[in-house]
Length: 172
Image (cartoon, rainbow, N blue to C red; front, side, top):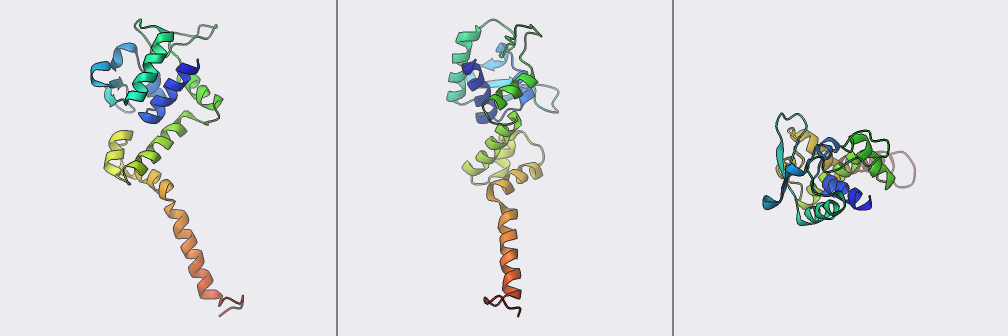
C-alpha cells in the first residue's frame, strides 16, 4: 500500500490533481507514449490531458507491478468489505491524513503555491497547471506564497507606530 500511497501523493503534488481526478483514472487513461494521463476534470464534460513527469510515471509503473495491468480503475479498493472496485475519493483523503498531510486538497494547494514559486509568480502558466479558469483563484495562492497581506499589515503597524511614538513611548 505504501507504493500506492506514494503514487497517489505524487499525482496530487507533481500533477496538481484533485481527489476526484485521481479517483477517475483508469488504466486505459494512461498515455505512456506521450507521458500523460486523461482525467475527468472539475466542471468539464470530457476528459482533459495532464502531462506527467518521469518521477510520477515511475511511481505509476511501480504501483502497476503490485496492482497488475488488467483494465479498470488505476487505484483499486483492497478493502476486505469489498465496497466496489475503485478506491473512493474518501479513501484517497484518508491516505493523505494517514501521513499527517491533512486533506488531499492541501497537497494540491502546496503544488500550486510551489508552481508559483518556480515560475516566479507566472499566474497564466500556473492557471494552466492547476486548471483554474479564474486568475483570482490563483492570485489567492500567490498572496499566500508572498504573504502580501502580512507584509502590508507589518508596514501599516510601523506607520502607525511612527505617527504616535517618538521612540520614547511618549505620544507626539
